[in-house]
Length: 155
Image (cartoon, rainbow, N blue to C red):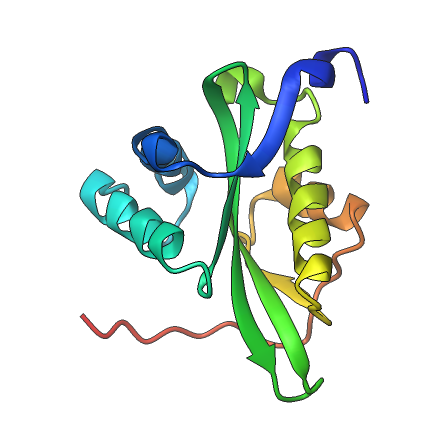
């Protein structure tokens, strides 16, 4: 671990960290093409995951008491693999803390968590034009897929 990373700790989110995490999601959704920040919705989503661990886990990167990054690992099942699978969502690092290895540490923590849960695969989506994110994920072994994401909003 680098000198800069030695003070960063990653672990499951605590209830009192959820407002800070919702603010971080606002930073993420400002830069994503498909979403817009809505603090109340982001807080509701984080609470849903936090209150129902079977849905997934929110991992937090902290420097001391300050939240500096996060990633969400959602749990599902792959019928193709006949095994648990995971979806990596919402990786974000505070803008002032980027370039210090925190994003890589969060990816490693998410992958380790998925492995601990017995997952056979972890999948993620990133904006097509977000080259920095694509490079980060590629460094950790993620590869493009011939599958095409499609969405249908139900609200």
